[in-house]
Length: 261
Image 1 (cartoon, rainbow, N blue to C red):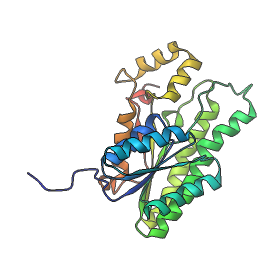
Image 2: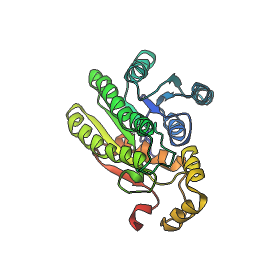
Image 3: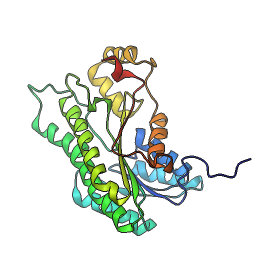
Image 4: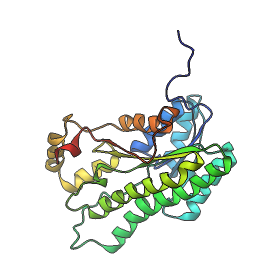
C-alpha cells in the first residue's frame, strides 16, 4: 500500500469559514476539519457555531468560533485576530457568508435591502480578503482563499437584482485579488454553486414559489439540486495543494444549469 499523503490533506493548516452556521459553510467546516485543518467558525448566530465547534472537537478535531458580522470591518479584523491568537497562523479562508432571499423588482426595491445585501455579500467579501490576506502575507507562508459566489454571478433572475449584482461583483473582486496576491503565494478562487439544498434556498423557494424551482430542476442537466457536501468537496480541492496551479478562476458547480440558459 502507498504511504503517500492522501489527496486534499490539510493537516497543520488553520482555516476560517464564514457563514459556518448552516448550509455550505457548515458542510465545508466539517469536511476541512475531517481532512486535518484546525477550524475557526465565523457567523452571526453564536449558538449554532458554538454547537458545531463542540461537534468537531468531540470527533477529535480542532475548532474554535468567533461571532462575526462580515459587513463590519472591526468584526472581520477581530475574526482574523482570533485565528492568529488562538492558532498562531492562517492558511485557508472560505468566504461563504451571504444573504439575499427576498424578492424585490428593481422598480420597487427598498434601498436598505440593496445596502444590506451588498454590505454582506460584496463589501463583506472585500473586507475578508483585506484582513485575511494581511495575515497570510505576514506569515510568509502564502495561503488559499475561496470566495463563494453563485451561478447567479453571471445570470439574470427576476426579483433578484440585488443578490445577483452582489454575486456578479465577486467575479471581478476575485480575479483582481488573485492578480494582486499571487506574488505573495496566495491563491484566490471563486466557486459558483447552483441551487443547493440549504436554508437560504429554502427561503428563496418559499418566496418565489415551488413552480419556479421545479422549472430550474427541469433545466438542470443532472435533474436534481445539489447538496452542501458536494460544494464542500469542491472547496476542499481549491483549498488544497492539489489545486496549487489554480488561481483567479471560477468553478461553477450547478449540475449544468447555466448551460441551458
